[in-house]
Image (cartoon, rainbow, N blue to C red; front, side, top):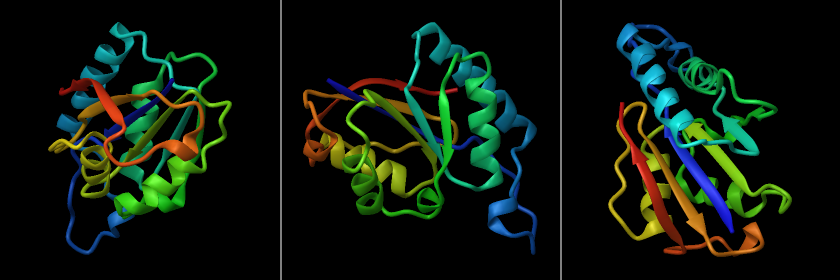
Length: 156
């Protein structure tokens, strides 16, 4: 059994002329992170690996959500930034099979498209929403269209 959690970054500011990758979380976004972190902790959520877009808003979201998680590996993954679902599915298919549970923290539309692809459902992740899927597979290479079963959807 393999698990994938998708988390969209929390609400971020927009300042004219500011590079998109440098957008910071708003105060509301920080509260969203705290809410999702509390809900994930209640579910005893513990991924083996978290891959995060390099954008400031996703890095901050990740750091706020994982506070207190023991031994969770976090990797900044450039390809998550502005990725289409096809790029994200290839990333999942190439995951080391020793990893049972991976989390991607990134952006729309890629994450929502990936969620819809994996579960043949209309997944639409708003800021700070988290969705988890389980897959009855032994190797990540076997993850494909409509192979996932949604186990939870969390909203702040």
